[in-house]
Structure formats: C-alpha cells, structure tokens
Length: 443
Image (cartoon, rainbow, N blue to C red; front, top):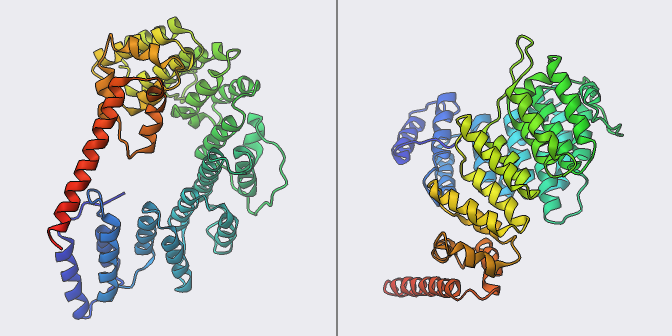
C-alpha cells in the first residue's frame, strides 16, 4: 500500500539532524519513517523518480536500510517495473546478511510474474529453501502458486511456449504440501516433482487457488461438473480445509463461468446458485451467498449461449433479491449478446444500461467489436443512444487499445466516427505544436 505522508522534505531535514547528533539510524522507528516517505506516491505521476531522489538523500544522511526498508524499496522498483533494480536490492540483502523473509520473497516473486522472467524462478525457489523461507511457509507457498499462475497465464496469452498452468502449479504444490486433499477432490495427477520435507497441510487459500488453476486448464472438460459435485459434497460434510473455501464466492463463480461456457453443462449453473442460497443445515457451515459478480457471470453464461429470456430472468432475480446490476453485469451481458451476433439484444441491453444511469465506456465498445455487422449495429444503436458522440469521447488515437476498438467501425465506413477520430487527432497535433512553441520560448 502507499502511505500518505505530508512534507517529506521537512522529515528528511529532521532525519539529517538526528544523524548529525549521533542517533541510531538503523532504529526501527526511523526505518519505518523512511518507509512512509518511500511509499508516499499515491498522487504523483513521477512518483518513482521522486522516490529514488528521497532514497538517495536517505543514504547520504547515513541511513542504512534494514529488512523492512529494503522490502519497501523492492516494492517500489517492482511497481515501477524497474526489475533490474528490484533484483539488485534483493541481492544486496543477501550480501549484507539480512534475512530475506516472506515479504521480500513475495514481492520478488511478483516481479518475476510481471516481467515474465520465468528463467530465474527455479533459482529463487532454491534460494528460498536454502535460506529457510521454504518449506513450511504456507503464505509464501500461496504467493508462489499465484506467481506461477500469473506468469504462465500472461505468457501463454502472449503466445509464448509455456507449460499448462495447472500442471506447473501442481509441481509446486506437490513439492511443499500434502496431496491428499487434492486426491479427495479428484484433481491430483501424479507428477514427478521434488518433495521438500517436511510437507505441510495446505490452507483453504492454497486449495482455492489450486481449484481455480485446475478449472483454467480444463475449462472445456466434461469432468468439471463431476468436480463440482465432489467439491459440494465435501463442503456439506464440513471438510476442515474445503468447507472454508465456500465462505467466499471465488470458486463458485469460477464453476459458473466454466460450466456456463458449455451448452451441455449450462443447466448446472442455477444449481450452484441454489446451493449458495440454500446452504447445508449442518451447524457451523457458512456458505457465501451469490454476489453481484456471481449473478453477472450467470447472466453472461446465458447471453453467450443465445438464451436472452434466461439472461433477463437472471436480471429480474437479482433485483428481487436486492442486488442492483452494475457496470460489470451490463458489460457481461452485452459482451455475450455481441458474441452471439444478436444485435437486437445488444441494443436493448444498452438502452436499459444507459436508462439505469450507466455510461457506455471503452470496455463496452470493445465488446461491440464482436458483432460482424457493424453497420447494422451502429444504425440500430443510433436510434437509442448517441453512439457517435460516445466513440468521439472514448477514442484516443495514441492508445492502441482504442485503435483496436474502432478499427472495425472505421472499416465499415462510419463517416461521423471517422470525422470524430480525425477531429481528435487534429486536437492532439495542435496541442503538441503549442507545447513545442512554449518550450521554444524558453530556449
């Protein structure tokens, strides 16, 4: 998190005086004060440059960063995507014999996922084991599993040759955790992976991420419904590790999403919500109720399968239970109708959405690009909303995503939108020319 900290320069001046007077600059309170300065970047667009400047001043003052301060410095570098600096600070901790604990390894794992630098992950894992951060550290195991998930998901999305997500996660899991709960769920596939003793009992959070990873890899599998039935049975039996997973909607939402993609298993989705609304009567079993996101995913599942009346019933049931469809709900439904090429349903959903006070944003515009007949879609939309003005407002010629959003529209000869785009491009060129003239005035 980023702290809000007033007048860092005054605080630095005070720290300078403390250093001159011979105070212990490795004191925990002084280190914590430095962290507040270093993490105070919520509203500064040039926060990283500012932070590096403060960091340099702290070193000049004679402040020698300890573990908590090094953690903050690595966090800043990772958030700024300055991964080289993050790895360097991480190595500095070792050279100074500072313990690289759970927080430091968690942050550096996050950097690995963001930078797609999978080549160094195995080395970092071995270091964590050598330094005692692993095994028997479930929070770090969970973080490592999330890192593998993000690394492989992003890498495969970019077309890189990475192994399957769950297969890789399972190797990490089996290295540190008891596989029996996965066997109970029926998602354990024997893998030749190194096991590091002692093996830990997994937490519900770890089992949750493993379930999500399995569904991501086997999203089109006919066995997902069987997996849900085993999962729900264990929840009803008040399984000490699996029942707590049902206290949030994450796994239930994932089941609705993946089962809803297959017309053969779509009919099971209402059952999942019914099980959430009517939890087991057994004492001490708490199950999360469907959230707005759960209802939105169900509505999307029906809309993408072309079942408009069922999607509308979901919206009605949401309202009956006191849930108001939000922007995510409308985006999900419109996205589903657009993929089904149901222009009439898209237009009606957008009319209802705008009538409910929600604006058409860039995500909605991206969803509209799924419609093949863009000319027919725009013609119908113009009857209910000012779609040309919306494109003019949302389009940014410098943003490649915006360019992708409007590419199909422009290719279908919308003169009004072409005019809007050209107008915005002229405005940007005029602004850039004005800035150059102003800069030249000071030469």
